Every structure is written in C-alpha cells, then in structure tokens.
Length: 91
Image 1 (cartoon, helix red, strand yellow):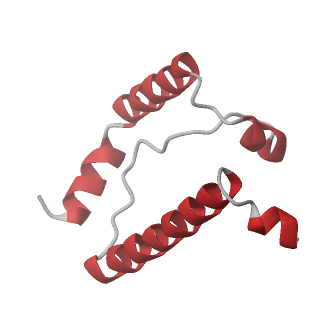
Image 2 (cartoon, rainbow, N blue to C red; image 1 turned 180 degrees about the horizontal axis):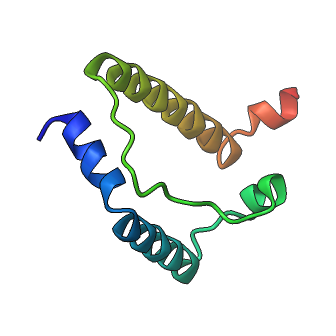
C-alpha cells in the first residue's frame, strides 16, 4: 500500500484513529512506560502517535547510524562506571 494511501486511510476514519490513540494511552499507562522526565517537561505522560511516521531509506539509515553510535557510547560509559571509573575520576 502506498504511503499516501495509508495516511489517507488513517485520517479518513477519525473514530478509529481516536480508538487507537486511547488504546495506546491505556497500554502505556498500564505498563508504566510513561516517563517521569517527560511528565515534568511537558506536563503530561509520554504518548504514542497512532499515525505512523514514514521515513525514507536514507533518513532511516542516518537515524540507525546515530542510534548505534549512542549505544556504543553509552556502553562505554557503563563499562567505565562499573569498572575502572576513569570518567568519574577524571571529571
């Protein structure tokens, strides 16, 4: 199904869209997935958009590379925190 057609289908059935949003909100609240930091920053819980964000292949590749880079960095920090603690010692 083409991206425009899928988006048009989502937007045409507003009641179904509202039901999807309510269900997503319920699942997030029931699982405790709402983040306190987001609630403090925005005044409300984290929300999941019921309309998917379509990303082209190039943008997806860029996002995937950025996420991978951050995971590698976080793993290095955690390895140091639970190991030699050079990051903390060196400030």
